Amino acid sequence: MNRSFIGRNPSILIFLLVLAIFTIGVTFMSEAFGAGMISTSFVKTLGKTLCLALVAVAMDLIWGYAGILSLGHFAFFGLGGYMIGMWLMYERTREIVESSMMEAPIPPTEQEIVDGIGNQIFGVVGSSEFPAVWAFADSLVLQLALVVLVPGLLAFVFGWLAFRSRVTGVYLSILTQAMTLALSLYLFQNDSGLRGNNGLSGLQNLPGLDDVSQDYVSMWFFWGSALALALGYVFAAWIVSGKFGSVIRGIRDNEARVRFLGYSVEGYKLFLFTVTAMIAGIAGALYYPQAGIINPAEIAPIASIYLAVWVAIGGRGRLYGAVIGAVFVSLVSTYFTGGQAPDINLGFYTIQWVDWWTILLGLSFVLVTLFAPQGIGGLFDLVSGRHHPDRHGADLGPDHGSLREEEAEE
Image (cartoon, rainbow, N blue to C red; front, side):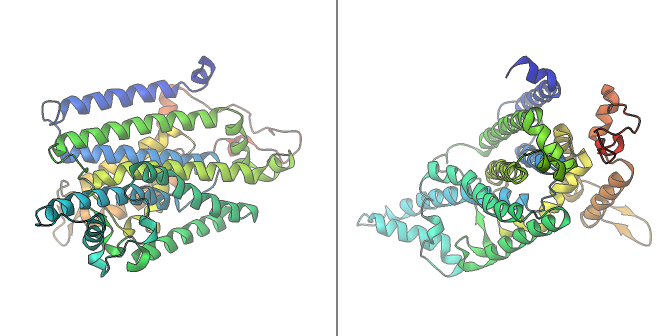
């Protein structure tokens, strides 16, 4: 990382410093390593929030910088969770089955152990056979590889078909949403190989670490989530700071002109779509062991819509804005839906925030879109004195149709 890169992106050092201070503070206030001021359950909430911030950064790359409103990136997030969840559930079940079978007079064979694992995992859907998708579930290395390969392959195939057909705008958004819906409906089926509506559970129990309390496990995942967010943020900043970033901004502002200049617009789109899907998969692989369970409802289209709302509220086109939006909405959501917010009795009606939170979130999205299109991140621009170039409405190119100042600010 050279000085010119940092010089072009001073927010990176600020972000990493804030994240480091936050991580150290949580560590010393946790029950595992500190004064116990923060409960283990809240440490898990904070860890999950960092994972949501990472997938928000991926969403900002594809939407805020490339102008592709994907309503399917949470599907990649969920697939990453399923990939690591398969290994966690398989190995945890193996421990339970082996400990029970070892008490038998005759030691069990390896096949009997595998059959017992299959019966424990798939008995809930009336089966005991391992589907083909579980072929590598006993290998941590291979399942970690699938965390990025499966979302990346799905994104590559979908993106290749969509971008080569030059599907853009709202039509592309609808297609990504349809992909997400089709995937979630498939996973709801018992014969999908992933336990249907039951999903994968018990993911918070790490194999071979029965003697380690959840206090420490939660902190390990919190540190891992913080590290992943830091690396993901730096990687995203590196992508958007150079020539690649200039090209994808050009595609966002005027795709036809970038194509006329000789750039492979479809290639840039496909690369970014695939890379951001992989980042989303990594975020999901860290999120669901902290959540403890994953099911097809997590991949429903509404989750991807929420992701777009987070980025819009934080301020799209600003990586730190995506992080702010995800953290803000996640923590406020926890407050309102966790029973911490007091109900408001109006006499004729009682407002229960558990039911009204989604309405409040939707209203916030509408208000931000209408009155603060730069989101919460725009406030930091005001404080730091960052301003857009004063072009006085002049054309930014040789012809009358060139991008104007008001368009460049979006």
